[in-house]
Length: 270
Image (cartoon, rainbow, N blue to C red):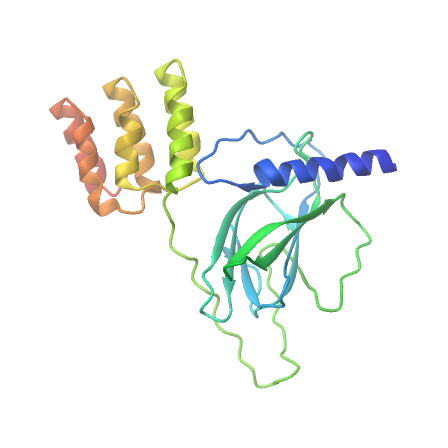
């Protein structure tokens, strides 16, 4: 691959990271289609200060022993739910939706993310660099390399009696923050037809979590009763406070639709 193409890939990855890669929850993006002969992308995450952490991709723990630098090869998906759980049990976990592929043609890339501390001391995750796939990659001495979903059992050199802790539980889901939710509502309201509003709402909620009150607000942006009921059923599984979901019935006018929603909730969303 010539230098011009490599430079273009690097620039595209920077643009991807700035606008899509560390995606704001609730924003709707179109994922590029990968070619039929695509390989798999690689993700590296490292801590600037050497803090040890567990890397959880799409709900699957990637390392049995906390590490400060992890490279995961063979990512099966374009969009990945990335969670960083720190071994100190004090630093709040980080969770981001990461799109890992060339934003133009959907081809695989090597992407690196860095964990750093901001001025207030909070742990953050940001884009570090991006490059084309390296088939002859040689890992660094401090790097933990593995295939997706296949954590290797490692020995602790300093303490041979060390017992690896059990895989950490994923942090609980969090509803969209107010600014992101405002952007989602603006996108929905800007659609001309109810079908388009519904598809936009489903795309946003399908990749994020919402509260019952947020579901109610979105339903009020939909013009037709059947559309509201359709969305209310769809959003149930993505709602963090399902115990309050009965309140969504307030946006429905017909008793038959209220009953249909209540029956849906009583069956656990089935």
